[in-house]
Length: 410
Ligand SMILES: *Cc1c(COP(=O)(O)O)cnc(C)c1O
Ligand SMILES: [Zn+2]
Image (spheres, rainbow, N blue to C red):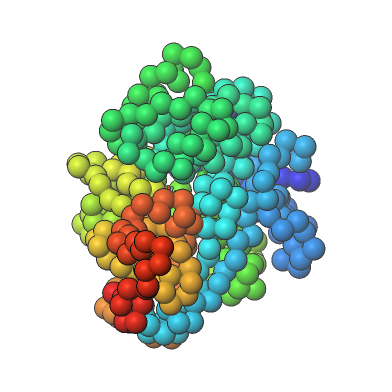
């Protein structure tokens, strides 16, 4: 069997739904999650069977929802490198620091994982027209994959979203509208049109398949470490689908018997200017409250209220993880340090997660001998404007300024 998906189950009320029909949220409003026949799969698939498979996230097809491989829409997403960062590890005093680098994904962010599986599944179910709000990167990825699938795409994005994301939607032929507000405002606007026109709602966790794509980050981390899990995984958290997905992946692997009982401590990292999950965690709550006046340079995590907040918080509590907010200045400083020590230009969201690792090591929450995986969710070159330049300009015939003789360490 290509997929072992059996049905959908509600993440809140436990109700189940048939899988071979278009479904959005559960009747109770909570996200639906894909369930698999892991008992059957346990006897049919072994980790070694993966070795010679396609080098993309589709190598895990038994644990993905697409039932017929001819419906797959792929640009080669997944199987990004898990890179050791020895100089940064040294600088932070962490024994082993690894970066899961999603920056080299097609289009430059991990959002293609959700788009690949989400769009493939939408195509399989016969969807012709979909709609979604986005902070930029998800819209860009979905616009391009929808174009490849021949699906019409309607996107609403904040006016101050990164320019690159707007261009990607436009070039792919998506219907892109900007809103002078936040992703939550974009969501309210598009919900109205979805109701009116009967479009497929591809909003975060309002369809069950995007998370299945994102969970493959968890499979890959486990496989790339030969099924020996790290002690800590840090993830820059907006809607939280990546973190929920990684947790779901680890639970599935555990049920398959491919990993041991002990799971990594999951850390949700947010920006000081938008930290609803961190606030909820510090108050030991099960859900978050809307964060007013949300603002951060790490655009992908500027989400004032996530539909799946209770799932993010549960993943943190269940793994004895934590949640941490980082100031924009610290994010940009860390971003620069990573480039100078490791030659890696990570996105601000990824830099936030690294800054959090540094802080947690300083406080002793991360021990000196632990293995730490940080998700760099995208490439810094997607939105370079957060880097301020102040460059000397010469006229022809002039010589290099004295700054070339001094140490460039600021
Ligand atoms: C969307 C996004 C995030 C946050 O992802 P979620 O899974 O929604 O929490 C982090 N980083 C980047 C670069 C993003 O585009
Ligand atoms: Zn329900």
